[in-house]
Length: 190
Image (cartoon, rainbow, N blue to C red):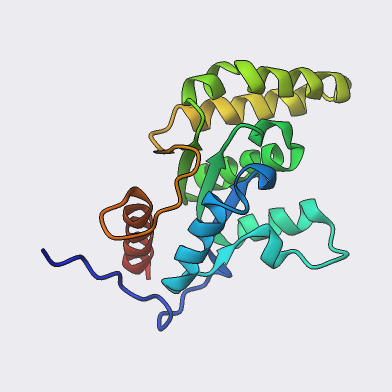
């Protein structure tokens, strides 16, 4: 059986700085799943925002991330065990969903070794993270509620599910199919 060929985007030009913005919790997935996803997207010619690669020393993290979101066509949030413990991840998610809704950009949730219902209901480690946020941001209840609402909205979307340790990238595997789908979508936009 012939495997589908991935179109290359390297010769196309579009009015975006980034094709894909990756939102993820580094301690959970930077050196495994998300790192492999990033490499796979780049190998196919997709300009991908990955915070290790794009934020320059001395830059303020939040403005840099928010600008990269505005300059991206597709958003991927890799939800993992510690995603909700990061205020950067939650702030990114709010901005991503607002941009996706207001400008019709594609948002793809990936649930990496987490159950979307735990995110939606804020159970387990997600409940623990929010208990800490509520103490730390007790004077900014609206901010914490926006984070909750964003998690709920994202967890209600159909997404990709991967288990801990999943890093295989070869034809007919879910990661390959994901990259192929993103590449095809971007190719059709240009």
